[in-house]
Image (cartoon, rainbow, N blue to C red; front, top):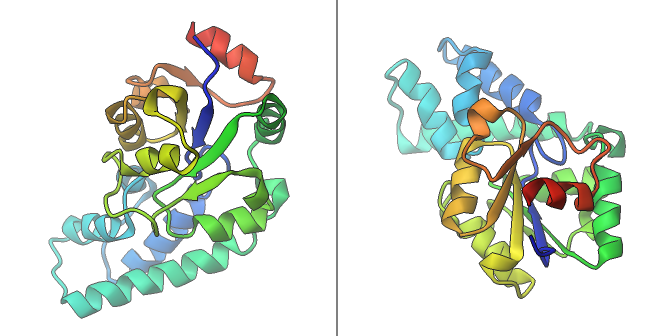
Length: 218
């Protein structure tokens, strides 16, 4: 395939692994509500909004709360999560990512973050990666969450690219669906059983160059 002009990366699970912080925060909140919540439940929360995640947890116990209490619970969870991610540093960037991003910069590619997280900017700051990306489109800049393609379409527009000029990296099923709905090539990062609809699935970026990846896509 031709060399994509723009490379769009999800954040959680692709650039850095923060799932454990989300799980700890949601688990803490569920425990405070006496709602059973285990790691297996956490899979359903990957790539979805904070509000939808909370609703999924409340539905586990058929719990109903007022709109005010709902907002309070979301804020409480996010406060705990922000405390956890404040411990992040460049050492937490996933293996292979720094070299991969550096090679893309050398190639003159446009780099974009396309994340549902409303904390993406904080995380990138802690990782010292903010200046690496040409555009950051996150949960504060979109109205619709994945699998709606809005985040990726906005990412492309932010750097003056068309969908066919973009390649997306995702670790969640909803993200893969969003990329395909945006008519973009999608590389799944993780397991084939979850990401099988992607054009290519890789375990990680270790010892992987952009050239290697494009050859696998051909």
